[in-house]
Amino acid sequence: MFTRFTTVLALIIAMVGCGRNDISHTINQYQERIANVLDTPFNAPMPTTTSVSLVYPSKRLLVNVITPPQLDVKQFFALKKCDLNLLIAQRNTPLGRTQPPSVRYLYEREVVESLSRCKVLMPEYSALLDDWLEHKLAALPLAWANLIQTSDETINAFSNNSDFFDSASSTELHTTKSALSYLLDANSQLRTASNSQELESYLSQLSKSHLPAKTWRTQSVIREELNRTTLWLQKQDLHEQCEDGQPSQKVKYLKNVFTLFFIEKIQPIGSELNRVHYALSPFYQKLSAESNLALSFRHFIDAQGDKGFSAYQQAIKSHVQFWQTLFKQCNMSPTSLNSR
Image 1 (cartoon, rainbow, N blue to C red):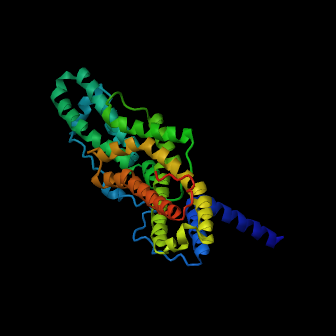
Image 2 (image 1 turned 45 degrees about the vertical axis):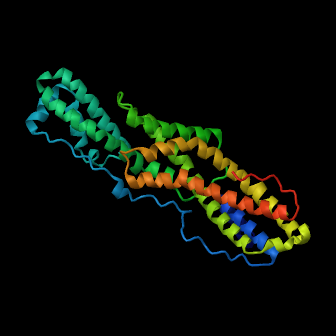
Image 3 (image 1 turned 90 degrees about the vertical axis):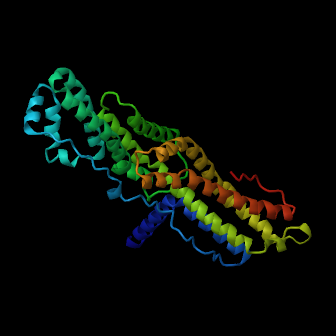
């Protein structure tokens, strides 16, 4: 009974492991099968970088310190006619001093709204309130930047290293787009203070799916492993397997391996990666161009987003072109190939 239990447990663990690392496992099988056909060990050099793990910029270095304006006790008590003094008091509690970025962002917006109301209720303090309002309006973009780049939810969405990608449902893609759109709009639309429940809901959805991180990790492993595979194949002198333009048995086997693994398993994931990237790319471009965000964060988004995707596409293209050239030399009709 114990032996049966441990066997079943091992199978479950193996299945879970393969499911979570499906694309990596598939490419490794692809490499092994090619090597077996050629009776040559697959000994391509490992990549010089480990970009499969998304290395997010240091959170400590991303935090913008927001300095509050100086206000003496007399001025504080003079504000009793409006709700501003209540906000100040809440901020100075132990809980208020440790607000997460989302709560702090909403607090800063509430202060701006409160200052506008106080100017109407207390015109005799308009000079003080105008100075304070100017200070808070200047600080609001910094609070927004902290929300975007230092929230636990957004860090998880952009750098979660636990999953690879195989496909995205229409719901998953829609919620990710909606969340990113909402967060970007929050910086440009100073209306009434955002709804806390709404903001937290979008952050939660973004973190739960972590679709950017999944697609970025997947395109990284495909890029690195296909580049390794293509370089290794180029050293095998396979043109010698097509004497007088006729394919040898090995080349015929290679075509079957190529079809089974690349065409039927890897390429469909690539098509899904393309679909998701083109849907999310406008948001990545806006984030990487936003001057209020830290340069290291913007470089991270750009490197993983458009630049990472271009490098992934080039790896796909180079790999497909290798097989197209070989099949043409061997007078074999290529299987449906798409280098994009």
